[in-house]
Length: 303
Image 1 (cartoon, rainbow, N blue to C red):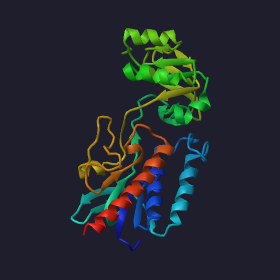
Image 2 (cartoon, rainbow, N blue to C red):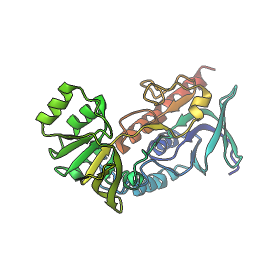
Image 3 (cartoon, rainbow, N blue to C red):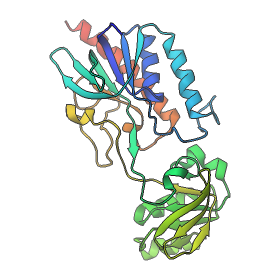
Image 4 (cartoon, rainbow, N blue to C red):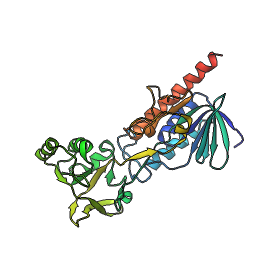
């Protein structure tokens, strides 16, 4: 790749990054997409709740998207990991793990988040397959099945209320002493939610499809689906290095225009929102691309 300077560098080439690249490519902007090829949903067999692509494999959606973006000759791709970001007088300098250096006027982080998998045997093997994060993405496929939620306290209470919309055959596993209030406990029991306070040892499963939760005391509970929202961290630390603010949930702070607090730095997709879905990633990426183009135009006309 001979070209070293671009108008926009997008770090992260999954749904949000590709959507931004399409907006910018169609705006005749010189764009570089840097991607290391590790989307957070790479183990998920099917994507849902994204109109025209409902039920499609996530990798198929992203591959088709990349082919369509690649039509726009103003967009280039670099396969690699961005490891350093520096703000310069004229914009930004991005260095990759291989030592390649690129510069740009604007930067968009569409880098997603990294889930911190609990130390429960087979959790990782089932994550995204039968251990689920979002009922809007996967709840319909496991509707009315024997379902468990791994959560505690206020989150466990609210999560149980939410999932009860998809199944009444529900149990809440607090993985240790319950932190629910007496009132919350009674409300859930009144709605048929079973509460298990035993610590979880492992999941029994076949190719990622869970059949039983095994507790450390040896007891088991049969389930066909489990919901869990494990802790996460930013997949890319470069926004923090640039001084971008992170909120209490660990997400990059952006305003209504997908702008961070650092001038010229934008962010979109899962790294900015708790509503993690392909549809929302696409939406925020496409919008960010249009906003970045407008800002470039305004910058040019201010000189």
